[in-house]
Amino acid sequence: MITYKPGDVFQINEKHGRAGWVGTFVLAEGIRSWGIQGFIHCLKTHDNFSRAYIRLPWDQLDYVGPAAIIPEEKA
Image (tube, rainbow, N blue to C red; front, side, top):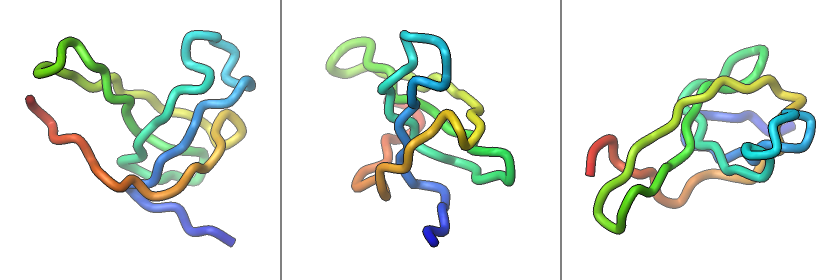
């Protein structure tokens, strides 16, 4: 059994229901009994980015693995 932790990466699956989010990679910041709290990295320009925060239940996620790099809060 895998024990998930902050810094793990998940991919949103088709059960999410919103086509624009399906396939998106989410970096978990919080692991909860119902799912994860995390964010996607949103690139604005090559030097400017932001985060979109999201909460997702387990059935809408597929585990990918631990993140090799975690983007910083501000560019």
